[in-house]
Length: 331
Image (cartoon, rainbow, N blue to C red):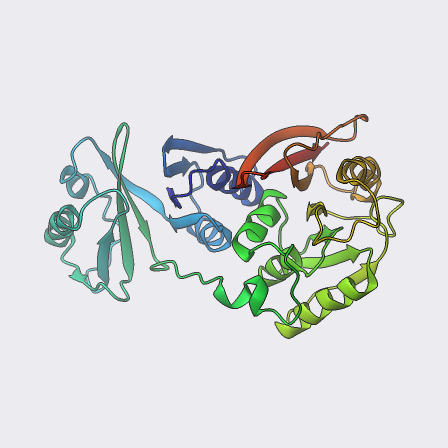
């Protein structure tokens, strides 16, 4: 079970679905309620990895009980894994503190475990869904994730067009890239996506057309002491100097804060999508993904058979701008 963040977007579930496919390609994710997703993933290490990587996920754990009645969750609990010498806590995003307390007392009575609210050995997450109550358990405790130290203005080099780390993280995750894969941001700017991919241990490389912006992106990467492959100064709307890329995610430049060299956003988007296909690796049987964020009023035209538009998500910014996040699949 994965508990999603509360944003009124289609992105949180799309991110979880992408990460489930990334680490367990035969598994599928299902949205069972507004903020609750379940999947057939049964490996706790994969669940931990997905939870740590996801920007829009608050909790991830293995389901250990289902019931139509809240307190019956404790009676239906599988306790083979429980060590009486360990501690536990009960948390929830859909239940009250009183309900969590009652469930915690029932679990304590059934397992003889002690309660620890700060650093529990087992964190039980109880959630109310449309078809009843779910109880999941995690052994990696409460999720702590801070974006503040990587926000655009905290970096050594800043541009108003830089996107925030949480959104950058989601774009990278939608590309289904894994550790050891080669990830490319062809319009990397200040390095927002490269920073997040490098933080996750992914081999990352960027391209930018403008020399001083490319240097600024390098400064940001080095400022966080991140391992990455570098930033190339090149034009990503013409033949790219790279091959064997495993995943691509980018924010198409637009507006006064971005350097477009006089090209319209629609032209940049069309020329980029037309040429990026040749840079993908062809050695794997798995499909490749190109994630493109662009203004929603700019039409995405796919003239060739290289890509299929798998899904698209809308992100409202202000009355003059809604971003579209297009998930393109190759193969």
